[in-house]
Length: 234
Image (cartoon, rainbow, N blue to C red; front, side):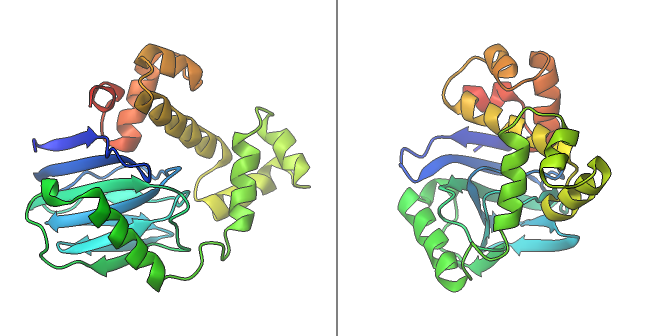
């Protein structure tokens, strides 16, 4: 495994993709969310995430399940060698909040972790966690209203009986970012989906609503820590 992010497919119906990281520490990134649940397995070093103004650290030998749709910001960690595996699994595997469990020293290398191991850990976390439906229906409704319509934010706000300013405050409180920022993140997630399907980067930029390929590349790198070119090649 080379330094930085390496992406690959899992060849398993319940795992959308795998992303391996090796490097001195880990990257800090802007707040974002995924359409899938993200399982983070840390083999050495640590990963930290900022969620709802709280920093949660996942040390070596531990795994964290970040529910689909949960806003989180990866935090930079110390320069010690960090090796981890991100597995993006079906959104049906989700709990109401980030959960961390220990898996001990079962693996020394990412390549030793099979899809069956990944799903076993995800299901173990879910067996200990409250239902994913707790407190999420309102957030899901807001997210759907922003992403399923091209209407101006003011029009979406009116549908909720709010002024534009009041709606923006509500979205920022419930979803973690302002309405326009949430829509941008949804478009970036769409870009990931199209890239996974093998669509050329220039076409992805157009289909996901970006002005051109360089615009997509700049925002994709800032949000996910890699470029569409690296992501698409892998």
